[in-house]
Image 1: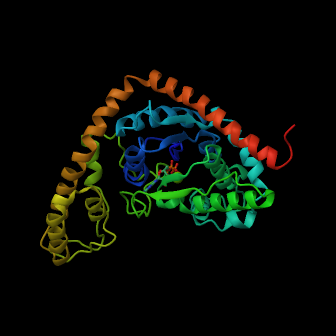
Image 2: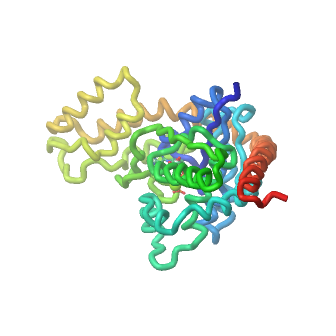
Length: 334
Ligand code: ATP
Ligand code: MG
């Protein structure tokens, strides 16, 4: 029996951070042998809000490849491909575009947030606006069954499912599947500044490539409870990023100690600096091996790029098949 397919991806807009690790990367690593795995470096999508900075997007590709290697993605198992090397995705996009409406995209909550962040207001570039449809084309290009993503991407998967249903129904076919989202953490990992989401375009990240010193510096800057002035003031644990990270990064054996720290924080018998000391210790255990492997990856950049280009050819031929089936359904195959 054929293995089911997974598709995920990242925009090459910078280095990967701990939000990616917990939101999406850890699931990719866990499932890469059980599924046929496709990982897309979405450079065309990245250009949609970075079109005036192509060097950033180009350099971002190498950063992603090094980060993938660092977290344990197996380049000989997963098909890591570059979006611009699979032009059939754009073809599929234009076929799907007939089934999406401006209103549907306008109501997508992630698009709303990102439009506000980018301050587009009255002049939203179309290239940005239609990215949810383009992302649906990414998924359908390999007809993925499962899409491991962070919480911010759930509305995109919902849109993709809807487009697939409409296309199939209109032409009485069963070509496009119903991809399922697979969430890593149930939450968006918050930024060190307390923002709801850590994002590589938001300047509030702990990167997988950060040195131990950088990690320490950032941990000691993490947003806690701004109303707590003295160590003996009772503090707030909810919305306190230091505790959110502790919950996310600690293993079972540490849970009891962390619960005790929360209790002491609430009653005002533990200093912020003590909490952050523990946080640094807990995070460094997870991030050190990743940091070490990333150094290895930096020595083999050319090899990693070559593998990605080879996989892009494989994906391109799979996407050709999907696009041809769609053409047949639309009676434009000659
Ligand atoms: P950008 O700010 O350029 O959009 P990003 O940090 O949001 O970058 P993406 O490349 O857009 O990263 O997202 C890649 C994947 O990582 C997606 O599945 C997304 O849901 C997930 N992800 C990104 N940020 C977080 C986060 N803070 N918490 C959990 N998952 C995240
Ligand atoms: Mg994003």
